Image 1 (cartoon, rainbow, N blue to C red):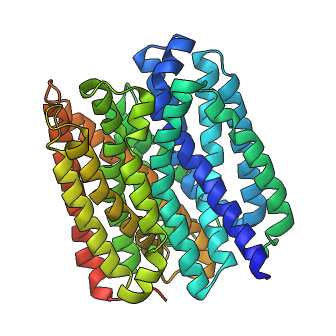
Image 2 (cartoon, helix red, strand yellow):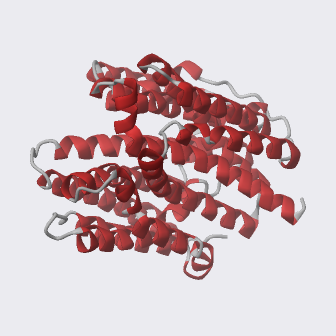
Length: 443
């Protein structure tokens, strides 16, 4: 494969993945205007996000595994079409029902694109090229979420929230054309037996137990039963949808657990900090988005150096240092108050978190797909993205629930960020206990 073609393939993968992350963050800063324009109450508004989370989280494993069967290029193209149509329908939505259904449809596209993009990356690159590509992919996962808050603020303050969804349509069309031209058709793989019912019911019920409004306990019970049946089925299948051997490798398992807790902490911070800036510092949505620049810029600068740093110090050392710095930054931001102000209370801690995030997310992605067999790369990519999505949802639900026990601001924010700090400490323990003993440098 020509070198310039590899560059185009990487750009297709990263831009497509970036679209997913962008939309998720734009919702955080656009909810007020969406509610006002469509006359939505708080419950209805929550389903604008929840409908997307249900289909995205519930279908991730299936999305990754189907690519292993019918071909990743084909399913990636299908994902782009679904995501583009879903984005168009969200932008055109004129009622609660239409926007919720459109967001659910958009989530199906994301559930296909997220795991398939990482699997395509692993198919297209090898050796040090693969390491650099995975590093770029991991960096995108953090930078995309942060930049989404800034762009969401811009749309909410200067344009229409609908434009944040309309813009996906031409981008997806361009990516679809480039995919057809530059991404090679992958070979047919051996058919797997898909436990579709177990995977969809289990993951969807789990997500609903976190974000739903009624019957959450029942949904959690259904999720536990369905996931247990799914694992039982997978353990006995000769061609499993999600090979349980993925969890037998210490490095991968440590990467999954650490990513779960890390994303739970960071998603909570991304969700709550724009709100505290607006309520305590009286920032506009645009100013709140721009308030994330210290984290976004520093994270980007550090992330582009991760490949070189990993060659010198190793993946494990970067993870340890990165999560430690994120812990310090998260603990520091928990002391924020209007009296302390933005610079000392938010910007300086964000610089530490930006360095930490830049050093952490790419190595976590590397660890999550380490030592993976070619036939398992789609499933492994699905698990990485599933842990990313579910970890963020569970972590944010936990942090918000804990902070809700305190009724005054900024005391509730202090408690929320201390809880997020505890989640980061759990991520560090997973790295030290499971990944550090492997002492592997990125190959």
